[in-house]
Length: 92
Image (cartoon, rainbow, N blue to C red; front, side, top):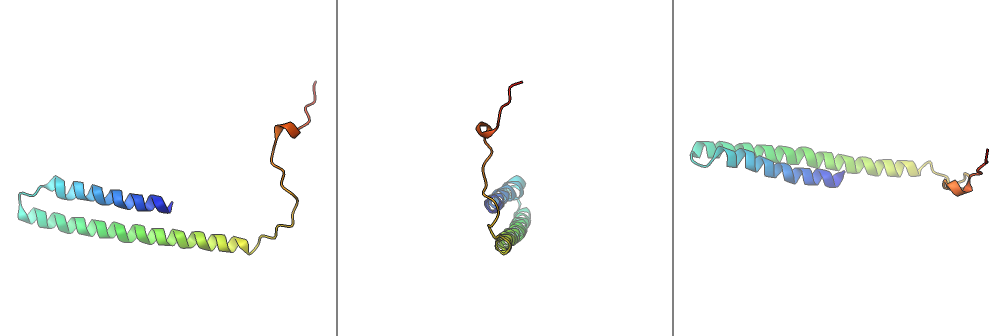
């Protein structure tokens, strides 16, 4: 999940670059300046949101793992994986 968020951030930056700066063109200086401002705001916004989400998910995962270790005792019965060979096949 964390790797997907990092990949999504890089791809969204490329999409913002292509759709905002390249689609509007470089003919007009005003459009170029507005495009750069929109690109910077969109990229920083995505960076802040996705990196915050990444940090939150990582911390949540660590809390979950550490929390579950408090309750595991391991004094139950031995686990035997399911196998068809161990079943009794009665012929009818």
